[in-house]
Image (cartoon, rainbow, N blue to C red; front, side, top):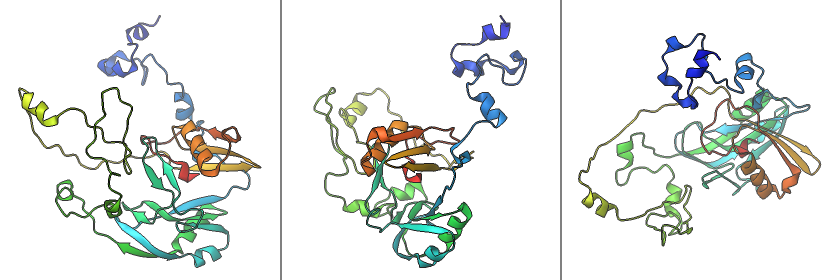
Length: 292
């Protein structure tokens, strides 16, 4: 057996303890990625690589403001553009109020009238024969924006009276946002329902814990913004075959999205087929069903 392979640990996360000089060729670490050759050779098929006969293209309207609300919109020019098959609006009866549930249980409207960050998809979707026509249609949509105040500094955002990213949440029914809750016991399955996020769980007496601690260290930690260089933008492909639907999704949770389709459209689970192509980028438990 190759001596280098014998030196390799069983846990691939430990590879960094070996100095580069112990490798005889770039990337040789004893364990080969199953998908390494396909990705390195360009043979891996990602969601955006898939092309179906007669496929239409859909693109989302995005917010030019970091905090805003759509008061109204005129989509007539976009609808009249040659090659446009339809414009879905946030106020369409079949769209308004529809929500997508994430892995953590939070909910977001499929087409919201509110924007919480610049570039957020919202308001409208243009469906057209080509991606370029869909992009041009979005430019023709006339939007009446209500710009709202925003704060970019964390310390300023914590101050009393600071502008809220989602001011409409302040009008949520009492008890919707859970701040003070504790299970009846450590083994209790009782869970509160939180608004927009997972449940806030509180166990024990925090002040008592500080009082009993031998040392209490207080500090402030801040970090700068960091983003990512995606190899693939978010996307999804849908094909209907009679009463059945086939999906190719940029995602990590096949059965979650299958269940979402079942809930939303009432399609039996055995009439839904999900494909999981390679992902060029993924971020935690977000739900990309609205891209389909």
